[in-house]
Image (tube, rainbow, N blue to C red; front, side, top):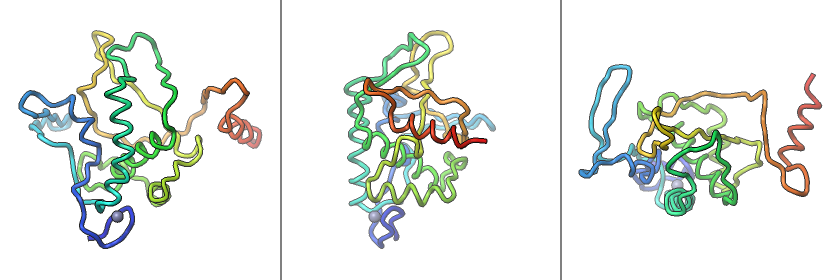
Length: 202
Ligand SMILES: [Zn+2]
C-alpha cells in the first residue's frame, strides 16, 4: 500500500485523523464516547477515534512528534483554562513549527480521509501543497494557511467543553479584518505583508 504522505510502497499504520488524545476527555469510565448524528438523530458509542490506513510507520512517527508536543502543551501544561472568563484568550510562547505542522497534519488527514465524519473537508490543490510542507517539515509563513481557533463553551456557564468534538466543517474564509499582534520591535513580517497586500488592492 502506498503511504499518502511519502508516497512510498510501505506497510501502513492505522492513522488517527484527529489524534486520540483529543478524544480522551469524551470517554466515560468504560472508555466509550457517545456519538450523535444531528441529521438523523442516529446515535452510537465509539471506543476509539476515527482511524484509517494512511501513513507508513516512519511518517506516522514524524507527525507523532508534533502531536506529542501539542498534547503535552494542551493537556499537561494546561494552557486552555477550564472556564472562559473573558471574550478572548491569548496563548504565547508556542513552538510555531510544531504547533502549525500539527494542525496542518490534522487538516490534511481530514481532507484525504474517506470517513463520513470528514466528508466536508476538501482541499483540492492545497492538499498537495500541504503534503509537501508536512514532508519537508516546513510550517510556512504566518500568513500561509494561517488559522484561528474558537473555544466551545457551555451555554449556561463559562465552562470550556473539553469533552465535546464537533464534525469538521469545510468553510473557506476570506477575512476582511485581521488583527495581528506585533512585538516591541515593531511590525511582524505578517503585518508587513498584509500592509503591502492592502496597498496593492484596488
Ligand atoms: Zn510514508
